[in-house]
Amino acid sequence: MSIKIFVPKDAVALGLGANRVARAIFSGAEQRGLDVEIVRTGTRGLLWLEPMVEVATAEGRIAYGPVTYADVEGLLDAGLHEGGAHALRLGNPEEIPFLKRQHRLTFHRCGVVDPVSVEDYRAHGGYRGLEAALKLGPAKVVEQVKDSGLRGRGGAGFPAGIKWNTVMLAENERKYVVCNADEGDSGTFADRIMMEGDPFNLIEGMTIAAVAVGATRGYIYCRSEYPQAFRTMRDAIANGVKAGTLGENILGSGKTFHLEVRLGAGAYICGEETSLLESLEGRRGLVRAKPPIPALKGFMGKPTLVNNVMTFTAVPWILEHGAKAYAEYGMGRSLGTLPIQLAGNIKQGGLIEYAFGITIREIIEDFGGGTFSGRPVRAVQVGGPLGAYFPDNLLDTPLDYEKMAAAKGLVGHGGIVVFDDTVDMAKQARFAFEFCATESCGKCTPCRIGATRGVETMDKVIAGNRPEANIELVKDLCEIMTDGSLCAMGGLTPMPVMSAITHFPEDFTRGSQLPVAAE
Image: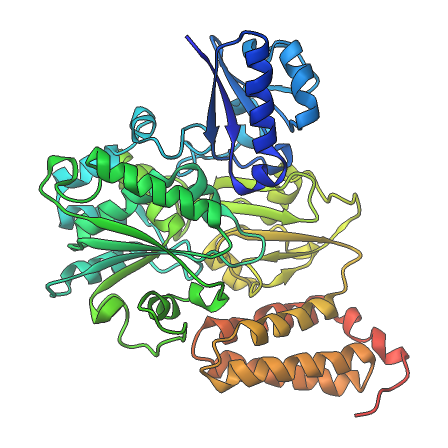
């Protein structure tokens, strides 16, 4: 019987030489007469330990990491195939503190299974949620999603069950299910990890949604910067069709669901659902006015259920274990688990799945181990490039939709980016405007022009040109963008700007000691 050695092939591991490590292990094992099977998996999310190699032993899996090409000979000599002692030996990956403390409901198969194997997926509990959904029928499936308290994980936090119910009740001969996998926020990578590591979980979640709302066709809109995720999703879909879990007569139920993955063209604005639908239909990604909402008039003018990857992938667990079991996690109106992505100036960056209610500080200190530089944390941005910058005195805020809103922040897609005390917050505020000006679809004036004027005005503040007066102008611009923008691109850009001005005012007056620039 061959020895199974698991080597990740997600984007981070590949960037750190995982392919070369896999080849070296296979070659070295062959030279030693060892019968080895290399299984390429996704990542478990402990990104500072990638490539993390695992071997199946009689006592369970044993992990080693981070493994480089130069380490392979020594690992094989130390008995890698038997879980032998070595300086890189991490032991049972489930016992690594970073992973052990988590509430892995959605991501429990990532880094464990062969991503494109239907058989492996089913062997680890896959498709039990779909089987339950087929027995329950549409109305009861939607009721389960409602009762679970699941809210959209794409950032808005809208109750998923209400959206599903709207599409289910819409009368039309054709309906669609669309997955927003255009994960463009800085410091976010949960969608990518899922698509590269457990694509059938997304496929199953979308299939359950299709059964519930009466759709027969679906699309996954994947960002162009994720070629590995795109290929993995495409291969998984093809294998699902061959296995009878997609396409015609799903699992012998008589239900039909055809699924395609489409690649975007690199526009951040296509993360907004109506702009995404425009792009999916073959047009330039421009934001649509609402109403009508996509649930009633979406893709090709038909009722369309649009959810994020993390929303769809939470559904199989809910259907398998029940709405009540899912709702036991979390706090208040924020129920279930949140995939948190920890990045920036941090020692241990990676994916953390945890129940809503954990604080920002706990994530940074208990999971992240503090800053990579060893310097004090000064600012933390939560929720992507349109999220607020929090100072130290707000780091005990729980990650909960309502608590974050009360602190004038947002959960967003769950991305947390850490900055130490060397950061210049005036430059970060300028970056927010610059990002908006670059990524705006250009349809509405407050976003298109407001962001451009914001960059120009922040340049004056940074140069020391009448900083007080220009900061007041920045505040006026932010008010106009918040109130007048057509979508969240312009509407939320003021959040990082105003949070920086509010919590770090000293960074906006440093330039006042400099010679005044000409107007």
